Structures are given as C-alpha cells and as structure tokens.
Amino acid sequence: MNSLDTSTAHQPRARFALQAALAGDPSHAYLFRGPRGSGKRGAARAFAAEILAAAATADAEDARRRALLDPSPHPDLVWLAPAGAQHMVEEVRERVIRAAAYRPFEGGKRVFVIEAAEAMRDESQNALLKTLEEPPGFVHLILLSSDNEGLLETVASRCQAVDFTPLPAEVLERELADGTKVPLYGGESSRQPEEVAAAARLAAGDIERGRLLLSERGRELRSEAERCIAAAVAGGCAGAPWQALLEDAKQAGEDVEAATREALEEEAKSGIKRSAKEMTDGAKRAGRRRRTEILELGFELCAAWLRDLAAVAAGAEGVVFNRDRLEPLRVQARTVDLAAARRGAELVEETRRSLELNVSEELALEALFFRLETLLAG
Image (cartoon, rainbow, N blue to C red; front, side):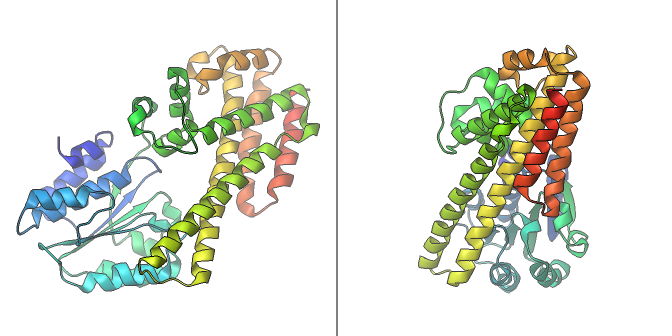
C-alpha cells in the first residue's frame, strides 16, 4: 500500500478521485474540503509526493521520500500554514503567488499547499485568483479547508473539489487506542478502553479532538462539563460552576498565544521578515482562536452529557457517548425527566450559536445554567 492509499484508507471517495487524477493529468488546482481531523493534510502531502515523484528527473523514490517528510526539505514543495488565526497577506503573496512563477528547482513540477485556506483574508484570496486561473504548466495548488463559508466562491469554483467525510467513531477508536499515535497535549497518562471509546465518540469524527480529549487538559474539560450539569441537576448554580469552563478556555488561549509568539520569533531569527506588530497580532489571533475552540468544545461536552442523560433515561445506554461515565449518568437519570434532558441539550446548542453574535460569554453562560437549573432541578 503506497502513501496515498494509507493516508486515504478511510476516505474511499477521496482516494478514488486522487488515484484517477494521478493516472491521468492532475489538475492545476484542488480544494480538499471536509471537517478537521478527517485526513486532508496527510492526503495532500501524499498526493504532492506522488506528483513530484512522477515528475522527478533523477531518483523518483528519493523525491517521494523527501516530499513525505514533515516539514519537507523538497525544494519544489511549498507548504503554507497560518502562524496565527489568519494567513499573513504578504506571506501568501511571496511564498505562493510570486514563487509560482519560478521554474522547478528539480524535476518538472512544483506543488503549493495552503493549509486552512479559509484563514486567508479576502485580500489574499482575491490576489490568488490569477494564479488559480492561469498558473504555469508546472504548478499545482492544493487548498485545504474545514470551513467552506470562509472561502470566496470565486476561489472555490476555480479548484477541483475533493470531499473528505468525518472519520467513523470505530476508526477513531482504533487510532486513539494506539498510544504511539497520540502526541502530548499538556500531559498524558494511561488510557482505559472505555475512555478511548468515549473520546472517539465525543470527537465527532475529528482525530485531533479525540487526542485532545485524552490529554490532561481534555480530561479536565470533560470533568468541568460534568460538574456544570451536575450543579444544574442539584440546583447548585449559585456557585457559578461555568466559571471553570471560561478559565479553561482562557488558559488554553494564553498557552497557544505564548507558543505562537515564540514560534514567530524563531522564524524571524531564521530570516522571515515580520514586524513586531505582525508577530504580536498573529500570536493574539492564535490565542483567541484556541480560546474559542476550547470554549465551544466545553459547550459540546455539556450538550453531549445531556443527550446521554436522555438516552440512559430512555433505556438506550448503547448510544451513550460518555461510555466511561455510565454510573454517574445512571444516578442523575433517576431524577431527570427525559424530555427535560433533551430540551437542555437544545438550550446548550442555542447558547453556543449565540456566541457567534458577539454576546458576552460570561452572561450567556450564567443565563444558560440558571435556565438549565430551572429545567432539570424543577
């Protein structure tokens, strides 16, 4: 099995489309679209490696091997990922648009991959249009996107779409059970099969989220969500249990902001030109994005717990996501009405969506949990 087959093993439609492209004449531009953690990144690296290997004038296997490395030393593979919440406009111009005019350093092809393409500003996307419309014959562009709404239609329409679907929970469970594939996210300890099964289902098809849920931070976030719902069921929301969720999200944002700032400063030392303001703004954007991601995950964990309560109350424990927390779910389900639990999950989702309108997070959480208390504790 080659690298493309391996990277798309759980994405048969994408594998078929990419194999067909390699068997013929690959298009000049592709859009790999689908949820985070569905394998787009690995597939893009493998697809780029096959293109460069096929066009190699010397050792094709060596070209493939170097292209598959992350980061890759192959001079004709340019991989652009946002350092913060957005791609820098000048970086897109310099490393993709202008660089696309230069002939390959070796072989006959150059491949440009733009990770999180939706994070390009409109200015960058508009500037990229001409390259997408009339690229040199030796250039192939691969855009990766988890949010199609963030891409201009004029950009998306100029790319051949390759769709990726969420990974099945069974696949995530197998991947997460292999400890060698789980990086350290703020610490790691032993994983029990029930916990792995729960993380796989709570991850909603996103392997990176599953890994996070098995980390120290993810475990704490799950515990905080459980405590918040328990407080609502027991009528104890006067203690503001939601504050812990806000604090977790804040700390995660600060950690990523500091790490991004350090990475940008290291890049500056290596010769990549950025102003102090660009580095500060980039680090802050990355921190805000991470803070939002963790807070949204907290909301989703609360909603999942309430849906599980409804399932246990209905005698359907087989569909429970929090499989490693069945006993506390059973205890709570004895006092919680099934319809109330379902309505509670809806309230959590409604509140999560309301945050997109820039309402106060703290006030929204306070209102949510007092409503949940009224609903669940009677």
